[in-house]
Length: 326
Image (tube, rainbow, N blue to C red; front, side):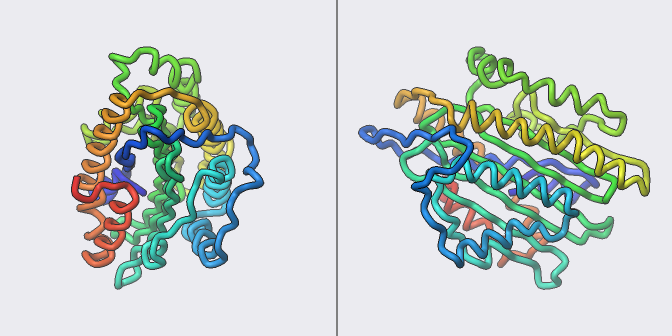
């Protein structure tokens, strides 16, 4: 879900990192399911209940953004879920969490979460969209994240598009690390240097309308990777065609390529983990997701949707991410 969410309300632009990684529950005698790296779903993938499929389609509508943004998000979600489908459970969130709004209907949101089967390296995947009518104009946030379990130490996946006007966009894309990059230089080389992720950020920053975006949250700066893409894209007033060109030719291409890297090297990569490492990861993941909920969603959702709706949504996220009581 959108996370730098509190910062969205205090400035024109915002970014979000919802590090809702799940806590590890040890199963010492169970072998984790291996994720197929096939580009097509396994024939053994379970059939989805029609009602569940209908709710999924409502999330996939992305009703408040243009066709260009909608097509990009749909393609990313379908690509991720088709690769991971045999290892994902259906979304079982209550209907009033899968889609929700405030009393005045000036804020609307949709949440889509699918947990991974146990045991497997997949913790859960999370997609969301938010539409808010603010005094400064409409704010649209679409996001897609995937979180791995402590059965692997590979990075998570995060992508978010934050649009405050047709000519203004904040683009966040990262594979947030789950180990200390100073101590574990091999981790840095495997997931960030060998994959050449830095070239995508450098490519975007060569575009005249693109400038680096810096989060006001020091905590967020600590949990992103050194190759994280956090950029603000602004075109001249009325130049919506130029913004669409940048999104189509650069943002879309980079997002698809980085997702491919994550699927191949992180979700589908085999990483042997000892019990001590798993315990450490479970603790680290738990701390990050707890802080994320407290700092961002816990304060901003009630302001937009009211205590009742916000409480319902937050409780559902806590249930899936095992943050309740941490």
